[in-house]
Length: 161
Image (cartoon, rainbow, N blue to C red; front, side, top):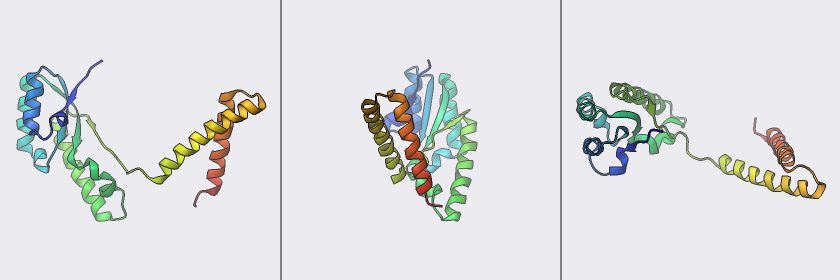
């Protein structure tokens, strides 16, 4: 197993300082948390690459400072903002490639009420399945699956078209 450390662990220290400290500590696998737009500038990327190469580190993943806003930037009805965000991420992907980064942390859409509902339905299916298993002397796993299937089909029928 390979383990690594993120530069985010050293926030609010400068990213290049965190990379240097990690290299100096002998850490070989790191994630870089990019804190600003300027940290994607080619000159800055080259500076980071010098430190990374000096210590023989591998940058496994990148985490952009915009991750807290991805739901707002990419999952809205404002087409221009979506297009510009996609363009910006293409730019950041190119910069990440300069460092050999193959994984990009992406948070995606914000939690919607549907996720909470699905957890409640799962909890209900387990409870009702256990109860049915006890009441009718049925296998517990099969009872939970049957109840889950019933909830699924009811929700499909009730779903908005």
